[in-house]
Amino acid sequence: MTELLIERLGHRGDGVATAADGRPLFVPYALAGETIEADIEGGSARLTQVVAASPDRIDPACRHFGTCGGCLLQHLAPAPYAAFKRQLVIDALADRGLAPEVGEARVVPPQSRRRATFAGLMAGRRPLVGFNERGSHRLVAIEECPVVRPQLLDALPALTALTGLVAPRKGGLDLSVTLTAGGLDVAVAGIAARDVERLRLPLIELAARFDLARLSAGNEAIVERRPAAIDIDGVAVTLPPGGFLQASAEAEAIMGELVTAAMPLKAKRVADLFSGVGTFALRLARQAEVLAAESEAGAVAALDRAARGMTGRHRITAERRDLARRPFVEKELEKIDAVVFDPPRAGAAEQSLWLARSKVPTVVAVSCNPATLARDLRTLVDGGYRIETVTPVDQFLWSSHVEVVAVLRR
Image (cartoon, rainbow, N blue to C red; front, side):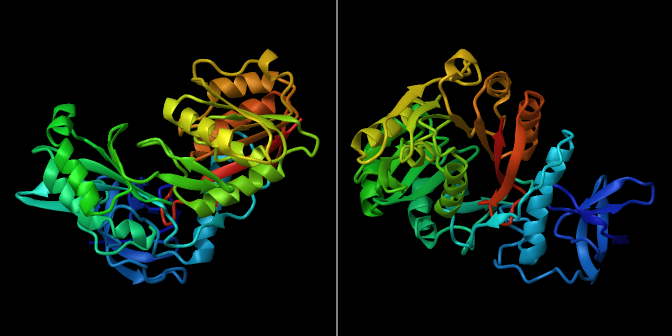
């Protein structure tokens, strides 16, 4: 056993101490200011005892905390937890030489995630469903989860039966569950195409037995008993099988509020890039005509159907376009009054270069990765934009991930 003083929290939520040889040691579940005992293994350490606890340490909300790898920071009190999320953004921006004022983190409540991906595998002849241990493929068969909506836990019997029916001999399944207006939408990844065909009828029967709204394998709906629809700003949108959706409706509402509030009052035509199923486009259409671009065909089709059925809003034109390979160039942006972009974790490097060359007055950057966001903001600032506001939005509760909404103006 080695006694260590924890100096700070690292970007992944681990406590950071300094080894005798000067190397940093990362200690999961330790907090800044604590004195602990730990077993040291290479560049990391395993917490064995808290000798002197931080005043910020609290009891975790879940019995599986410390075993399940889904949450890292349930033991940190709310105020320092929110400050940690804000600091993640500040540090990422500083790495790119940016120092705007970063607002307080807006944190979603517990039990707010409407979508989660469970792991399913066979332990001998017994199907197990849960989350993986941290840094391991070992499964924690969960009995509770304070992060997700209770209805997702109600899906566990169905997911267990599904795992027993289709789990491969080697490896496991990813079981994505989304709570929709029609009920539970379940998408399975890890089934071979030949097994889907062989098991099609049993899969349909399973969906009926557990009253699933829809059951999909990959991007194919095996059975859709009710529309897997969600409400986006008062518009019903039917999700494509396995399609992307913001994990929390509460976080989506916060980000939608920040994006729409940033729009210039006189904006008549705006672009929503990496638009998904219309998280922002449907909101922006209350004020202006919207050009929405997205690479996933299913998302584009879903947004187009929703836009055709909406009333009292401006037109939305949904276009399928790979913005990493074919970004909107300067000439295409000439008549655009504002741009919103919300790319995958890799960011919007190419699109940011063209925006930096444009004359678009307002750009709102939304990101789930502060590091790539900082890179893209650096490009925009170097092109003449100034950062007006930066707001962290914590929709991945008790993790080391954070969303960010940044508003830029010319």
